[in-house]
Image (cartoon, rainbow over all chains, first blue to last red; front, top):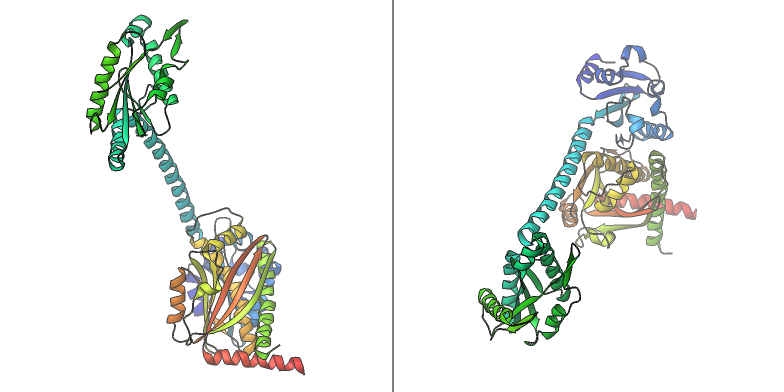
Length: 312
Length: 208
C-alpha cells in the first residue's frame, strides 16, 4: 500500500481502521493507538474481532456484509452503542463504516469520531438548565413571599391597606361602568385599648386575628376584607342589589364565636360598624371611607354593644 | 384488479420486504420489538399541483418535523427524505436510549441517533430502488434537520431538478408505541418511468 495516504490518516484526529475483506487489520492509526492503548505493530493482519471483541455482534456482521456487497455507508451512534463503539471508557465514539477499492480488492474504512466533548457540553447544559430551574423556582417562591408581605397584613392575614386600595379602585370603576351599588363598611373594635391595657398586647392581637377571621367567614368570596390600621377593618361589598346589609351585619353581630379565651379569661368582642354606599355617599374610595368612618363614630357613640350606622 | 393498482401493490410488497429487514436490524440494535411496515405507496407529479405534506402525515400531530435526507447521484439522481413528527421522534429516541426526556430541543446526540435510524431505513428503501433498477447507487450518510411543515413542503417544491415524488407511508411500531411517518423520494420523470418499467417486468413474470 501507498505509504503517503497512511501517513495522512495518522495525522487525522479521529480513529481510523482499514480492514480487508477478511476483516483483517491493514491499518490502525495513531489516534486509535492513543484511545485504545493497542499498537498497530502488535495487531496488523489480525482479525478485528480478536482485537475489538465488542464489535462481534450479529447486527455488526450483517452491517459489514452490506457495506462490502452493496457499498452502503453505515453509521453507529455513540448513544445507541455504548458497548459496541466505546472501546475505551473515557471516550464516546460514533462509528462510520464505508468501503473503497484499491487494486481490485475491497477495503473497509472504520472511522471512530470522538463526541465526548458533545456529551460533556450537553451534560453541562443539562446541569445548567437544572440549576436555572432551581433558581427560578426559589425566586418565584421568594416573589410570592414578598407579594404577601406587600399586600397582606402579617398579623391577621387579611388584605392590607395597599391591596385594599388596588382592588377597591377596580371594583369602583366596575360599579361606575355598570351603574351598580358598592357598599363599604368601616369596622372598629370597641374598647380595644381597654382590652390591651387589661389583658396585654398578646390578647389584643388575638382579638384582631379573631375579628379578621370572623369577617372573612361571614363575607362572600368576592368581598374584600382588609385591616385598615390598628383595630380598624374595612369590608368592600361589590355587586350589591340594594342598600340592605342587614343579613351580613346580623351574621357579624350574632356570630357565636365573637369572643376569645385568653389565659382562662373569656373576652367578648363588640364591634361598631359604619356603612357608606357608592354612589350616594361619595364617588371615590377616600370619600367613601371617610363617610363610613364618620358613620362608625356615630354607631360607637350609641349605648350598648354592637352598633351599626348607615351614612346619611 | 386493474394494472395500475397491481403495480402499486407490487411496489408496496417490495418495500415492505426491505423495511422488514431494516426493522429486524434495528430491533437487534436497541433490543426491543420493532415492526416497520409500508401500508401504502403513491406517486405525485409536482407539475400538476402543489405538494401538501400535511395530506400525508397524521392529522392529530402538529409541530415540527424531523427529516433525515440522503442524496444519490451518478447512475440515478434523487433525494430520499424520511419524515417523522419531531414530537414522536422524542418518544422514539427515549425508547432507544431508555431515557425519559420531554425536552423538544434536540441535542447533537439525539441527531446522531436519528442519523443512525435514518441510515438503516433509507438504505433499505433506496437500496431496494437501486436493486429493481439494477443500479448501484452511491449516496452519503443522512443529513438530519428539523423543519416546520410549510418550510419542508416548500423545500421539496423548490428543488426544480425533480418533477416526481414517490411517497411511501411508513408505520413504525416500537414496543407499544406507534409512530406514523412518510418517506418522500424525489425523482426525475425518467427515473420514475424506469422504476415503473421494471415493476411492469416483475408483473409480467407473475403471469408467465
